[in-house]
Length: 305
Picture 1 (tube, one colour):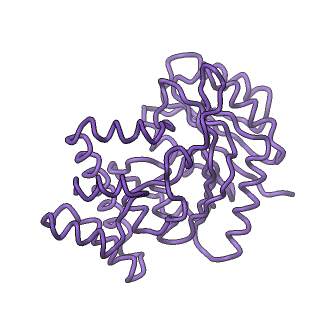
Picture 2 (picture 1 turned 135 degrees about the vertical axis):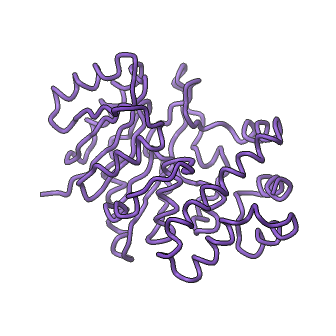
């Protein structure tokens, strides 16, 4: 019997796209999976679509949250409920390649042979325009994110992972007992855990079509759009940086005693970065490697920090 992969598919008013996504899951070359559709209080026909497919396919089930959790905690609570050895995250509006589960699971098993602890495997995705169906380029290429730098210092400052490409091993569950309010994004939190206590592995293949439309919670905007957005509001950028440091502080307070001495030193430095003067903050970037991807991002970081 092959091992089961549990897919956590989070929904919120996704009636328009959900059916196409479910169909892509049912076409997977690896058939031994379950899908838990985790609905966060939809007011449209999302749950009707989910219930219809749950009746057709015993691998599919629907979980309705008692209250709206927000997309990050909706995903993380779904992961916590899983009893499978491997868990994948799935957005409501994308289209998975037929071999996505099979390919990711293969890379996961290869990574597990290299070490103990929780493993996170993530891949690339092909952005596409929802209206025209036109491919817009691969996510990591168009966003200029450096997927080679997934050490703890870089991940404290910048998330590289696209949640809809992620698979994690069940070994991550003991680290999810508490979910602080400071968590910015679910995939970022999972990556921080695995970088500290296991492995983060990138697979340089696009395993899904990543839909771009006006309702994206987090989209695949072009690099030019990213820069324009960052220059539009200095106040907003400082707030984003504050939230990132707050997330790092919550992570350190929760897991600091579990870390190796070297990683604890790095985590502590990041956690209290905003309590230092400007010069000390900038020196910490160099000393610990709290950098983002590319010269332009890092120039902005050096200015705002």
